[in-house]
Length: 113
Image (cartoon, rainbow, N blue to C red; front, side, top):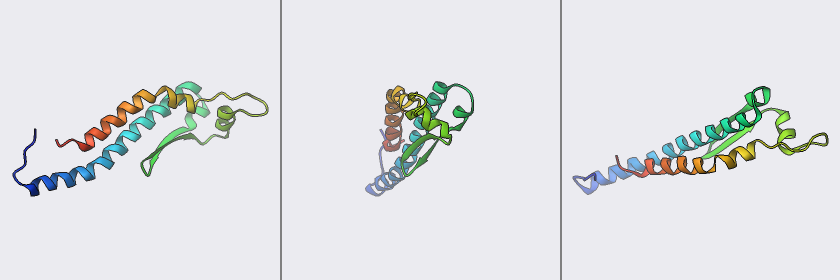
């Protein structure tokens, strides 16, 4: 357990933790989004659709999607073909891992080293 020489030293540590938490959370979000991205790519196999799937982090939100018009038709279906979703099932398949990743990220941002 870490000890502090004064209340001021403890306050400095708390300020550092306050700055660390958003960074650790963003790192966790990126790791979780990369996992979902890869899982979605694995579901569609190789090719243009898989290559179009990517992720990003914006305002503490993970965004996973595709730039391909074919992704919309595949995920939601069309008048010519039934839905063959790949993004939603990828997210569901990764749920437990995402909870673990984000939980560890929050703890890493809150624990005094």
